[in-house]
Image (cartoon, rainbow, N blue to C red):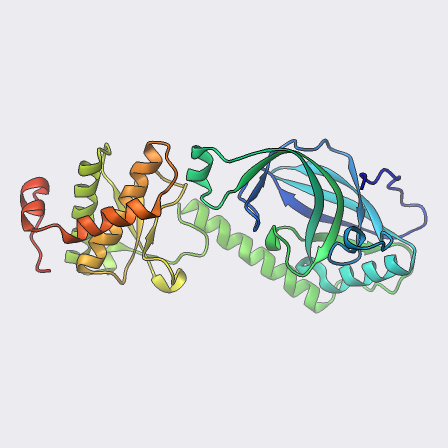
Length: 316
């Protein structure tokens, strides 16, 4: 199947739309793919399906056409909607769903490679880097590999098609997107992962904070890491399946659940400091060996704390 080469022209169209259809240079999509910036040239033309890639999966006619162009860290589609039965259905779909409509892209891979150790350190879920590709089609979908990031940015009718401006539902959807964006910016500025509720150390029992800091210092010395390790705390309800984690934001910070204490706390601290050591060596984050090291730190006896670290002695 060849790339769509027809004109993208407003003449005879039933309307226009714009959409973000994929991000470049990461993070990976749901399939583990990262698309390199410049994998296609600006102005690349694609056809537009009505729903769920129907022009790729059947002989269905296109409902429109679009051009792809790089915009900051993403590629946007600027499209026209055909003045046809399928085009009218696409126009109605986009106007009804508003910014909640997700998009997906159909393509052929021309050149790809496996991720490097450094890339896996940043994106453990990455499976391949696509260096060059040939997108042939874009489609509105219920759930796309890119998630809600790849969505309709704008849609409008051409001429009198019964459009009376945005509805209350449209405005509410836009407000939700703006609120989510504000929260994301606040999280990034604070150096924490999006959506994680941070618990300040002064709100916890002092002996718990000291135990975590001593364990981090012990692990850092044992693993040959220079400098001190900062421990930050999070409410486990905001990330229920995690006892701790590290992020690409910092190479000297670990995040630990504020609900942990005693040996369980030392285990998680050792696990996450081991990840920092792996990252410092340019290695992928290995859960098995990090887990083994965390267990070793949790089993450490009083002499380990008193002699090797000089830390306080706590009742286990």
